[in-house]
Image (cartoon, rainbow, N blue to C red):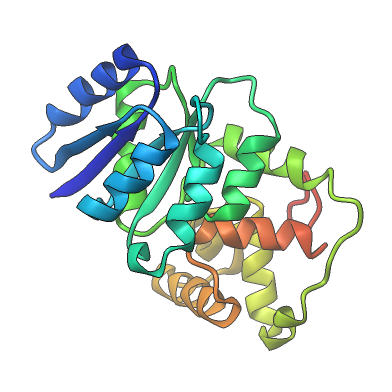
Length: 221
């Protein structure tokens, strides 16, 4: 069972998401928060698999709440999906850098919401949709100068190639097709890269690929 906490200051929004999620046999909404402080408290109390976090709430906003949740070693297994409107701003990129596993727009289709919750709950990140790739590329492209992290020196040439394709938004199956590998081999490469670079999921890997200058917005190998 996937355990979810909803964090949004609008009661109707929470009710709508709850209605969609609780219709599924594998998802349970275990708590609701109206601001960031409540979201943090519920995350610590309930240890959900996923927090659906509105980025703009009164008091402590979703960005700071995300940072605090994901910085808490006791909440290592908790994943955060950012909820936002379509006119996204720098907060989204900041949330991804803080460790959020992706984002959904509030008017997303029910099937996309359910898919997103399941994807993140199993440890993956919401980076496949084209809108997500464009957003990450847009904000990463605003960086003043690439910062080639020394951590990248630990990667082999093949791992650098795979990381670049992850940064471009390709799935493991797409990477396998591009590099003529077995899907299981592509998955193993991605897992090893995340271990070597100490990143929690693919969203963090995408951010690092852009910020290090390994790839640039719009790049495709």
